[in-house]
Length: 178
Image (cartoon, rainbow, N blue to C red):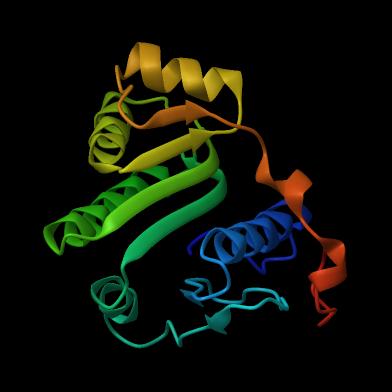
């Protein structure tokens, strides 16, 4: 499970919690979840949660090779408007290509897309979503962009913002913002 978690952003922290809870329920608690984040927040669930050290060389690549499913859980994960946006899209594409070469599943759950402001950003976004096994978009604009502009319709659904599913009672208060 990867996202911008534990960075004192209430919305992203809520997304992490909702994703873990949803994955745990879907897998009926028999799941090991690895959170790819520099500082994810605490969570009580029936799942085994591991938080790897990401400061080691190729740590994220090793994680992808050892998982069955790569999940981008919630948030505005596909955009190119920030200075680092294109680099982030290239990084995501590299990870997804690796996952697919290793016959892993890739899902984007409850995400938004954009803004995409460059032709290369649009090309990278199309490549990323073309490889995904499942995409759930949290807003109408993202759904229209993906299906109309990028012409990606296979395994794409219009969903909602996952943050509304967060069960606050399961959150461990470890001085992180929620």
